[in-house]
Amino acid sequence: MKIKFLGGTKSVAGSMHVLESEGKKILIDCGLFQGRREESNQRNKNLPFRPETIERMVLSHAHLDHSGNIPTLVKNGYNNTIYSTFATRDLCLVMLRDSANLQEKDAEYLNKRDKNKGVPMVTPLYTVEEAEKSLELFKGIAYNRFFYITSNVRLTFYDAGHILGSALSYFEVFENGKKTRILYAVDLGRKKMPILKDPFQVKDIDYLILESTYGSRLHEDFGTTADRLAQIINRTYQRGGKIIVPAFALERTQEIIYCLRLLEKEGRIPKLPVYVDSPLAVNVTEVFKLHPECFDKETKVILEKEEDPFGLKRITYITDAEESKKLNRLDEPCMIISGSGMCEGGRILHHLKNNIEDPRNTVLVVGYMAENTLGRKIVEKYPVVKIFGEEYKLESEVVVLNSFSAHADKNELLQYVEQAQKSLRGVFLVHGEEKESQALKESIESIGIQNVRVPVRDEEIML
Image (cartoon, rainbow, N blue to C red; front, side, top):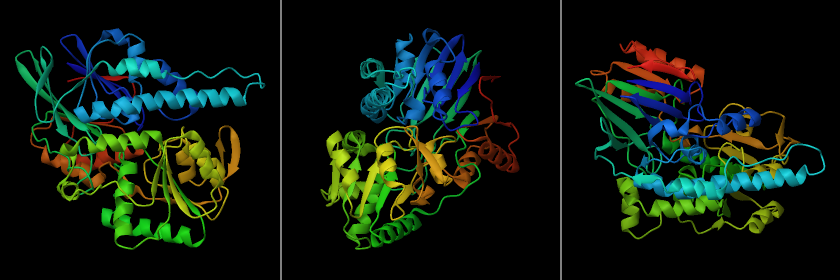
């Protein structure tokens, strides 16, 4: 039995790993790599294995850094089952279609712009048709029920509390008369966050594959986040500016709307218009409403009162491209929430292009920005950034609210490991930049666990 780490090692992008037992290979996640454009294109197009050799695939959740390259997997020869929770399956129905559509639209825009420049034509990684074909292979599995995915590997999904439908994938591998228990906790959510249940604690683990996104950092309490959000809105409103929010359509957008609803209800923010400019966010919000089994007690109470936890009087959901373009002509305080979350594609690029040179405006960052993405350059306040190949001065205020993060922080990760410490034989740290993974490694070793490793890309480890 062995596991090969193929993506999301010393990085938060492109999660992809292969668990092999008795000659059968199980792919865990198949995410898009995001970073420098050319490197990303090459890594996403060229899978590090032959898809037809994979026996089964297990998907932890619907974020594109975990699911976004499934259509490439399928169009290159994979034709077996993809296991996920029901909510993840439903989210991928809209996420993968949207990913393909954005790639097609961005390629069309760039090709039109560069038509007479003599540069090579841009082609999308996969088409909408190819994304839809991959969706036919999904099979939903409920939480807390084991299921044999091969003759000797049993899978159970537990709630990860990260995003809607996210799962801790618990593998029980029966080999040579022994049972080995492996928990894939990538990604792990946080406790006491709005909307979703807390992550489930699995204690009987031999090997733990754990994320390390915030391996050295702590998050603010979510109550403090609401206070800071109110301050940002009020400050920008007073100077007549717009608040531009690059946000993942999945989870982050719903959390922001949920928080805005509470702040407005308490009279803590002005009644400014809010535009969710993302067809995907509109569709994802509808999927949320189909899965109350994932909600925490507080959200269920709101639903029992027949109130919409994602409803806001001054919110406008935009799907039409022409309506989106009209937002660029607005000259009044407002909030525009748009994707993608790392500013690597989608409508957010047009809003940034039209607004970041105005010092009245605020770019509000509410999620993790991977290295070499436009989002990271904005976080690091580069004086000049490139959007669609053109240079723009970053004159707007930039504010980062990491406490919206759906990822566990250093202490939450350590607490999770401590609860499973008695049976642990090894911990593998992935989904984190190297400095974060190394910092978490040292912290875990300090509580008495010694077999902690930070795999490198393409490393294969015998279990």
